[in-house]
Image (cartoon, rainbow, N blue to C red; front, side, top):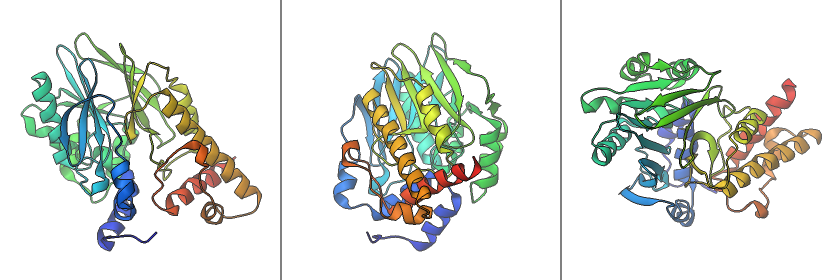
Length: 326
């Protein structure tokens, strides 16, 4: 598959950033038009706002999910996110790729709830989830940011180019303990913050009850093959299993449409199949690149948008690293 309309300078910068932004930017430049159209799928909830970069769906009482649809080329948000409201507070989840994305979600929160976000949660350090966090500062009273110390440090050390304003915003963040579950009280609504790891060294999941909605960050992907660039694969699969998604639950994945139990089960099957294939390739004495070059996911696992073979190679390489260390 030959890239179309790829900007080599921009491509090199995004790859250097080492985040899901690179993963999705390359997708936008290489994906056939037919798949770009099919990828967003139908919304699960009631759509309350629609933009070229994504749609905002009401998926529960005072809970809205932003499903980003960046493959048309608009990378304002890139990642999915969410708004959760209580009587006295409003939580926005993710900082997105550009400040315009965070500002847009905050404006939607104010239109829907009457309040600018009072809290912001960053699930992990990748640029498409945090680089635009300063957009929340445009509403008068800046919200309280929550992130783990590992996430904050990785943003400052890895997300390039450096951004002093972003660093200053994150410097004032409330540090979430990566070993202990905590909560945010929004007034009549508690949001559980569950620390995990696997996609990166420090991932956070937000869980709302009644109905149970899991905002999973990039621990879970739906219909898009996941980015393994920082992954410890066995830890990733364990973290997803530990979330124990039940039949009535909804999941806001890091990328792709809103998921249900069957979607999460299918995702776990993809993770298990990648493990099986990577182990088999290593046993045959192949390099990760060699094993990945001749591999495709079984049709029984359904449609997964795999943009180039590079991403499968990254997944195999992650398994090879883990197997070599064991």
